[in-house]
Image (cartoon, rainbow, N blue to C red; front, side):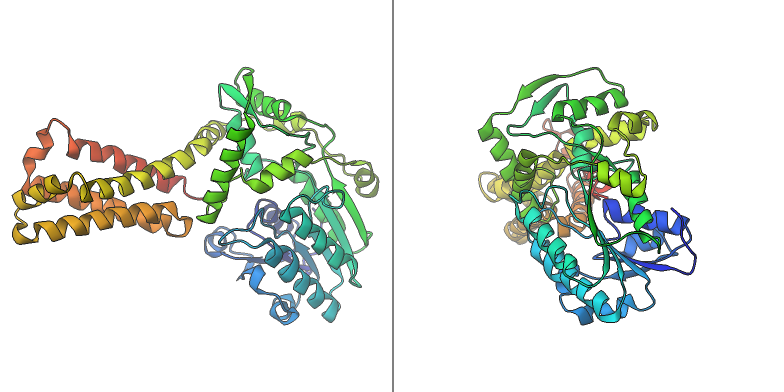
Length: 436
């Protein structure tokens, strides 16, 4: 990337897969950067030279909401996007209302250069709310008197991984590759090539008022795509199995449920619609205008050998939902069982520990605490606090039992021994909690 040090760029959606790499490239090129995202505390520590603004784009729906953040800005790059509507995400709020207000604010103050990251194929077929709202944003920008460029990348892959690109790595570790029904071909595009394209259009002499598909040179089936990652990770070819439609729909539905709980699962209803449509385009106009030659997946992977960290991530990514679901169910079921068939035994233990007349109340309180911890782990927003609470409760359980009922250490069922497995799994969960 090349740029003049005095130029300042507002990057919206600056903590996402594409946005964060654009921010890094702009900094390296000498631009001043102001980054907008919903949560910026952690990234502000990692990139302290960026002026960070915490803003929920879906709530910034009036031009006036954006005007203070555009002061002193020479260009805007909008990378904001959400895959699917959920408890914490609104495709219309982010793609249409918030983004539309941003474009209107730019026009109002004469901030002409706007680069907008859309999605490939949204103009040809829009089967999902994701694609429909992306197209609405494209149309709104096209009607503004601005020097705009609309970039429509295919599935973006690169050194970083999130969502679909993370799923490709995870599928590559399986001994048998599941092929989902109605899966069309993909022309994945390299993250570095997308960043380079943004840099091209930030130049003051760059052309404007055009729409470009950003697609890699090769059309790949899912099996071919994952095969590239398997070879990159050093594993031999895998056999394939077709996932029955009912099973596939169940997995998508489970992903929707996870989304409702605040988790950004890569397999959701929108994923089903989008992979059935495919992600392909003609990169010739992109090459002709920018001079950028998009790299194939094979070439990009060869240029960047896989590390042991990549193998760890690929394996842990698929295990993550099982880790959190397992811990959540463990605490919920433990509480329910102790309130039900195990109630008398639990009260007896409390009495033996010296709780006396409070044995029943203490048992009920403990059971409700277990259920609350399990529910807290299930919700993304409260998962960290609940995991820490589970460690605290486990510590109290071990210390209290050791002091009051040391015989539990030699109990044939090993209740105090088994708790350490839960503690270790909880520590693993805390380590892999973040998505990006």
